[in-house]
Length: 364
Image (tube, rainbow, N blue to C red):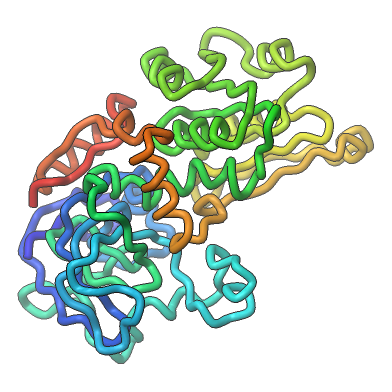
């Protein structure tokens, strides 16, 4: 099969022929019909974060099930599925409590060191599947716990985005923050995830949804997603402007970039009793400074890291699919272009420059 492979930290994405194994036990073989280019994969390729190489990344995938392993019980051949990088065992106390996104046993969804690699080069060299998915390829071999079955009438490009951008963004507002009717929200960073925070906050009933970015074109897109106010933080003091708009700060501030400066900005946007949520992936050595003075303590404000929008993928992905088909969730506006698997590097360059929201591989 054809796959886009990264050979090591800092290397480009190169399309090459890769061998894929047959599904074993609880694995599912998918014919990939769409694969989204999320910034998280670019972060891994640029900084490593301990991931093995060479690797096939790509964790926003949608496709049709071609074959299943002997122990698969929840997915059938012909099902339309969406992948998600949440890796959970399903049997530990954390999973049984409903917090699959916090499972301490992600290794349960991948093959062990004594088993053959799911992917390999023509000479037999093992190739890792990033996040257990490996979606920058015409086929993917994935544990059934990382897949959700979705309705057949859901378009594949829109389906792919649900697996990360939507569950992370909308889930952060709906699941993690528990945004309620009448709440105020600020979102720093209006890429794919940030736009979905806006969508989730509006679905939950927020009345003030303030989008913050430094690119006017992206802020215009945020308006189309329902942002009630927008702020270009390169032109005005975003913290002071938000405080003026809300009378002291927001109930929920979401940072979706991963820079210490914008993380500290999100923390400063909270009202008394408000909350800041750090979603963006920062560099490995990044730090922020927290005020622990008496004034900070009595403010009852909090800071929380968020992974994957506190998502239960088996429940939430089909729910978002239904919301899209009902016209209540904007997925079409997230897709900037459909590309070939040969165009991954070029598309990521456009993402770095803020020229696109999501590029989707649909030609393999």
